[in-house]
Image (tube, rainbow, N blue to C red; front, side, top):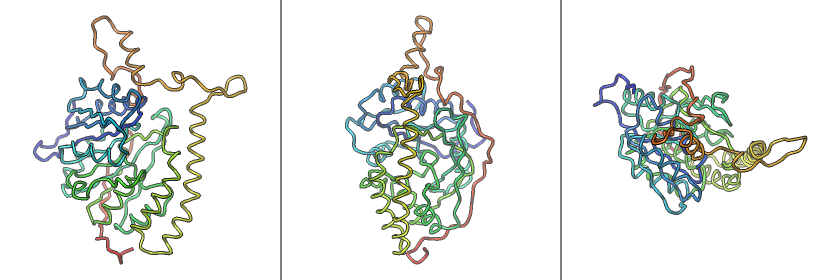
Length: 346
């Protein structure tokens, strides 16, 4: 496996933390993307938040081929924020790279993270670009996120824009920094990544932007559409905490409600096209097995087709991660000067 030309004593160690719930169809792809990294992760923590499907079984199949993998059975559902906090507590590396169970890391993501962080050891949070896809990452759409001149600009842009200016799975932060910050806010049912980003900015921590696609973000029917209403409440709470101008608060919330409802309709449309198919001029719902081929099913098929006595390797089964490639994008860090955030700086 290729290792970047960085002295081991100066290269920061990286733990990849994945939290999953009912992700049997995608968890294997997320872990497979770690197997294929150009720089192996120092540790992988996979936390199952009380799934009632075969998510744990899908993750445990990688124990023999992904060094440093720890699979944790959370037993019961405690929510995404609490689950991420429990998982982060098991991390031992200098930095924690976030990966959602339905996303994938680009093949050179950890190598790029390591190179950038080794050049600036003071970075507390690094966020990068992503590729958004539905079925095939090769046909995905690259999404570039902005850098900010100051923490106050980052806060206002994040609160005012309908699309958040980062992706959780394209984020890596210093373990000590998130521990000192108190972890994710467990009072929020959703938007915990936004709250953490705003809190890092408000605290004046060093947040940097990396101009590189480091993740593949999957859009699918099991995402947060059903939580959009609670998301409006969570957003209002964030605005109240981080936007100091009362007129801006009212304006942001008034604009956000129709924005969230529109997102819900768009996600419902995506769900509709993924759940049904047109046959003979009418829609029919496909069977569960036809609708999506899960990683366990692919592994079972691989085992049946292999010779007697041979061990199945999850990496040999077809998956979106298997066809992911390095994208022709720059590998530059935005290093605009940041100012300490104060109540008068917004």
